[in-house]
Length: 170
Ligand SMILES: [Zn+2]
Image (cartoon, rainbow, N blue to C red; front, side, top):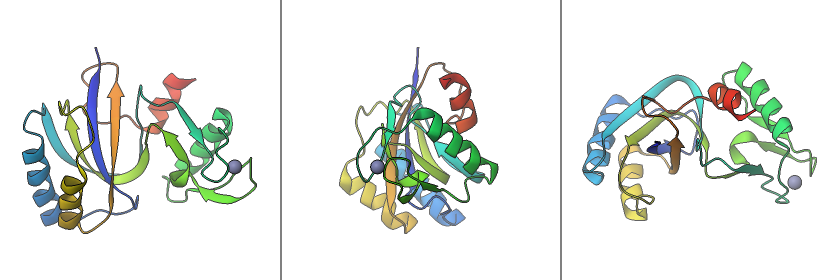
């Protein structure tokens, strides 16, 4: 048994819309997903890693495409988490170039955010269409991205954090 979430997060990890924006976006998001089990707007005190859960496959370099070593990535994530993901800068081991954890290529898509719209069991089977995403972007006044997340057990009220992901992933 697994639970699926569709998360919509700002491209900018630090972005938190005002209360009015959050409420309007949640109302629109709820209308877009009439079959969803539940729909929430979530604000975290600190930046969280929003991962794909069971769908998580690999992380690769955005410049040369090399698959990044999971231990290197895990260490970089641990270091960034010590500062609540405020600084996501990394030096890529393959290219020796500067990048950020947020700009790495995640398969499946993952991201960093304080704010998210989350639909539990959206029963959609795909991403929101571009026009629906644009509607949410204009309400929230910021570019957004979509993350599908799948988790083993029911009962997760929110998307697990990186620390829990790491504990089960190693
Ligand atoms: Zn590279």
